[in-house]
Length: 142
Image 1 (tube, rainbow, N blue to C red):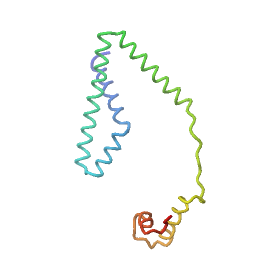
Image 2 (cartoon, rainbow, N blue to C red; image 1 turned 135 degrees about the vertical axis):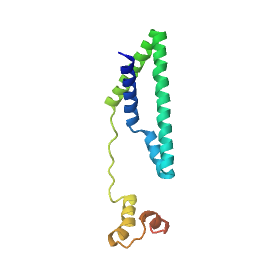
Image 3 (cartoon, one colour; image 1 turned 180 degrees about the vertical axis):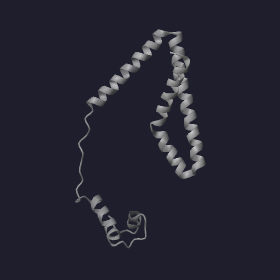
Image 4 (cartoon, helix red, strand yellow; image 1 turned 45 degrees about the vertical axis):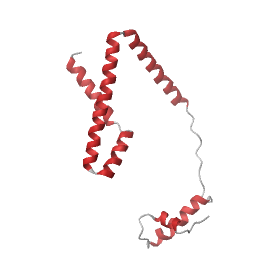
């Protein structure tokens, strides 16, 4: 492979990693909503720069290890493959807990129904958030 092909493959992998949303995207949305567009774009540029630095150090660090001592690189490669196999096995064997369905007889769901029903059905509410005011007024004390 030529140097250009390797760099293009690396850039493509970085773009793919950046396109997959994660906790950073949640933080970005929260920061954009609370701070505005400029704050959001600032955080986005810092996230991209951080990802580029982190992935570059990881890839080039492994390249240095592979070039200097191939036995250690092969060990790391096999250890990572084994770790992924263990994760796959755990994922395959996972049995989720049974779902518990709540009935309308429980106090929490009945309280929710009582709290939202009068304002919702009559259309008289001026509140955009019905439940906090209803609970604060003491209608469902107990």
